[in-house]
Length: 86
Image (cartoon, rainbow, N blue to C red; front, top):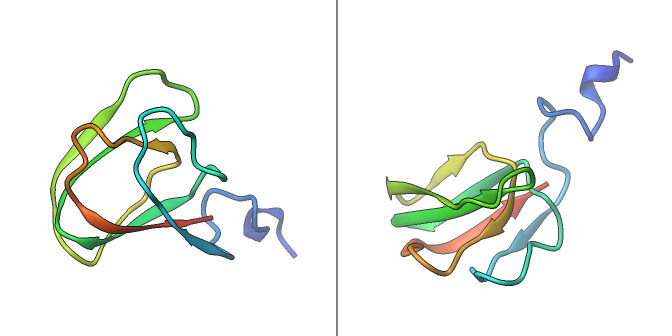
């Protein structure tokens, strides 16, 4: 099988999920491939390579954000029912 399809590849689908509680100080238990947003709002994240948070504004309910987040920040996150896909 072509190596680009293994579970660690950026383009491969998630193999597991977990509920996320936003926190400004506690990193996610896994760096996710994407975030599912169950309730509309803003989602502030930090990626593994950045110390600066970026806010996705006006994310609709049911959206999937294809971002490799290491943190989902409590500050500026108003969306609810966020699930990490990894």
